[in-house]
Structure formats: C-alpha cells, structure tokens
Length: 348
Image 1: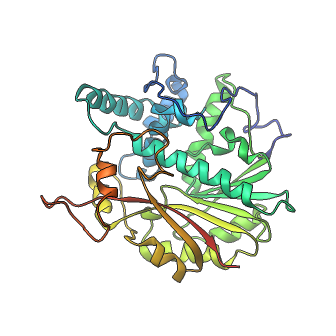
Image 2: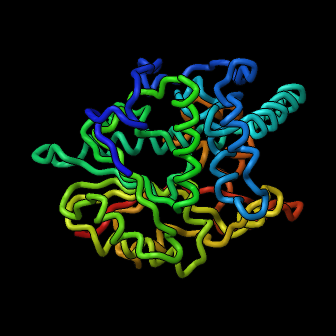
Image 3: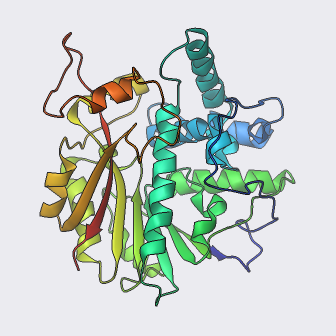
C-alpha cells in the first residue's frame, strides 16, 4: 500500500498538525489524558485487546514503544503515539512514571525511549541535509517499522519517499487502527513525507528486498535506513544477512541508523515478555566486516544522545558511560545492560 500527498486516502485525510518545531525540547509534563485520548475509541480498544501476549509479542512490543513516545510527547510530538499504544500500555507506563516520581528516582520510566527516538530523528535530519544537493529525491526505509509515525510528524521528510517494511500482520494491525480512526470521524494527521509505501514482508524469512523494489525503492537514490528497535529481534544469521543486503544494494549515498543491544541486555526479554536474540558489544568492529564504514557509536546520555533529558550525573546511564565497555558487570556482579546508538555509512 502506498500513498502520496495528493492522494486523499487512508494516509492523507485532514491536516491537523500541532507541532511547530519538531526539535523543540522542553521540560514539559509527562502524562496522557486517557479520558480524552483517541485510544479510548471502542474499535481501537477492540483491536488492542485482540493481541495475544505470546503469539503477537512483536506487535505488543511496537505498542509499548508507542506508549513511551506518548508519555514523552512534549519532546517527541507524535500525533499517533497514543492511539498506536493503546489504553493498557499507556496506563501501565503511566503507573511506572508515577512510582518513579514518588520515589524521586534518578531515571524516569520511558526516558531511554524518548532519547532513542530523538537521536534517530536528529541523525535522520542531519543525514538528509548532508546528501548531495544535486539530488532532490531521497528515500527513507524503516525496517521493522512497527508503530512508527515519522512520515506523519517530521518535516525533514518533505522530499522523501518513505518505505515502511514489516510483516503483513504488523502492517495490517497498524492500518486497522488508522482505519478505525477514520471510521470514527477522527482526522488523521497530515502526511509530512512526499509519499509512504507499506511493504509487507517477513524480514527473517522472506525476500523482503525484492518486495521493497517492487514497491518503488530505487537503489541509485540517496537513502537513509532506519533500524530502530529491530535488529535484536532477529537471529544472528538473519540480522547479519539483513545488514549485508543493505550494503550490497547501495549504489548511492547510504546512511544506516540502528540501535544494538549488548549481550547482557538480551536477558531483559523475559521481564519485557518478548524475545531478543541478536546482540553486539562492539558494533564498530562488526559493521565494517559487513560493508559499512565511518561507524559512530553513542550511548544514552552522551552529548549527542541526551537532549537535556538526562541531567543527573548519578543517573544509571551516566554511570555506564564512565565504565569501559570491556567491563561486563558492576562491583556487585550486576551486568551492565547497554544500548548502542549507531550511525554508519555503506561503502560505495
């Protein structure tokens, strides 16, 4: 399924954007008014309630991500985060935030999600600005797109064709939520991207790249690949094949933005009721072997991954930044669970 700005279909119904500055970060106030949220629409609630905790763990993880963006929407400005998250995940995360605030915790629930989202937003805008000005056509590919709404909220995508690649089940669920909004008479936000194409493919088991090209992707155009909250759901062989596929099909300027878990972080899967597999403690060593160059690795709290949201120097993220990555655990034996934010370029 694809749509452009001039096509008044499911993706481009009514302009209702409230974001005047997508990079404005203020202290804001955490929270969502669930009494008035669009996630309370009965059709939307039925869709969210239909998810099975075991069978639909990827869709549920995508909704959890949307909940984090909704709770930190004063800095992210995602017009679809609440409705993509659903009532249950929003209430659960709000309760965690309330407990953190009561304890005066150094880390507030969801702050890592907020920083990660802002890091991808900022690096995406910078990459597009650096592309050769002779080419006015750019592409952005989101692998494992889930409940991502960047095509609706980032003006940096005005000249971009956006491709959202995910399983048929995940994209059907996403489109069903959007359709439920339309059926209820709720306006969808304005499509900021030049066009959006949803590509149905199981990245772990299907020839997703052929489906991507069939949807209009062109290998000769400058492209930013976004792999946010994605790689660690793949088995190691599948993750590496996906990364090699990107470099092998890059004939123009190509930037990849991705997050990597270290090995210890994958053990969070049980607590989060999901499944994690692929990990890398040293993405800067791995990626050049797969065809990438100029790899830059950041951690939450670094100057380029802070956004004024992590200021307490005793915060867990700052503590980990000061410890060598060669150190696997603290003095009490508790493993350091790290998330790396990685920007890299494909060889040409």
